[in-house]
Image (cartoon, rainbow, N blue to C red; front, side):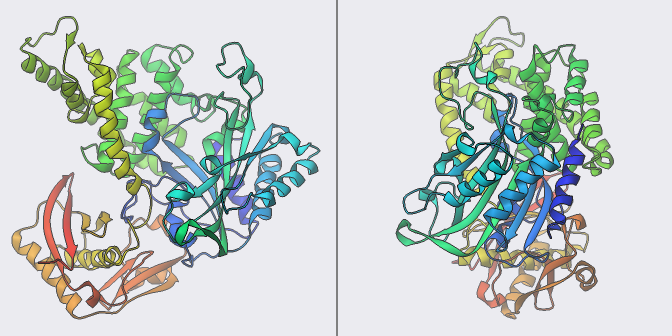
Length: 606
């Protein structure tokens, strides 16, 4: 049986033989991506190159990327959704296009992985307004199925922009002027028509198709053809250089290879599920939903914690806290007592593809167990909060009805889930609570849209100026505090800069003034800003600032700000520092665990 690691090795090897250069797996927790909490797709680190930047490795790229999508947390519990996954990806940056991409992926599935071509179905873009129907992909798929001795008539399905269109902004009508996008073509694996027509299926009397929710089909790969650019008035024109962006979920490909409709029953997940069974005394057959949530959430939390992120009430820390606590909710629901064995099994399952987990295991285990204790204290505090508010004493007897506002506070402030609130003995008006949560989630999703977009918040002049300012700020902090200080994150918008760095105490007023003074001195000097492509070894010799060496390829892009700052970066930047006018530091704050944050503005009005 083919293992997950063997699928990765076969995929990389297959595309390397076709002239692709393997690029490293970018960190799951980006250290220098201004708007993204987590790497959520293989293409995310490549957005600048898909938009026209020259990649140091060339026009054909391939990799496997660890990904996390917080948007899917509430979806986990079925047989196919996960928050953490590995994405196999290959890219053509203005090189090959549809014929090569679709042919090569079909060959990888049928000849490389040995999948029966009769189990494969595909979807193609049906067109939208002035964007033509993708008949080119249709013709290619017809030829591929025919060459395998299969009548293509019922193999190819057409869908609109909701299913077969990709852009960073979503649907064509939501794309800003100048945004690139294009049609995509998905490949689905068929687990058998009996899943659609069996007695318990709610879809048995409805037509079945690859995007049906009955569970018969599983998407295993998506080829995006970056082909169009939006113009004023909503029209689209073809790009002069067309790109291919392919992504295929490793976990789903393994499910297809093993013909397991439930990915949690594949060889990758099954040992972890067994460890949950051992820790609870329950079986997967009777408590599948809880065990899927436990497995996925602790896997994701393990990988995030391995990136030195600890649970907190902000950003990445908030997400990992939510994962651990939702995992614990379901663990306690089925009488779980000790999560240590589950964490150990997760590391055992992933150590072949992610060997760094073994080294990080002691720290990861400590983080997760510490959060469990914090959560227990939170539950106790929640009980005291309600007991005091409703004057019912410390010992709660029976069910206590509380206001929807108080239930909302327990969720948003104390970090509890609605099911946890109920398990503590509290009931509330669920309709009013749902209305408050819907409003809260709508606001959160608006914010998350920018957070997960990738790259700078926008391409405005002020945002690009802010990006250059962070390079000056980074070096100035090192001048004042020492070269052991380094950037751990940033968020840059047209309104302000947010810059995170490692340091164990707040800066004094004198230190802050000194940093600001250095930055503004370099602005007044009007230093030139330029980049150079160079071998990684030479970049290190120049003293360029760069972290996570395993992220970088043999050839890298280094931005120079005069002779003052040298930093690995993808850009963009201003051409001279004088364009920044002035930088003003607004405030600093402690974000926990030896991490500090500075807020600043470029060219302030006062």
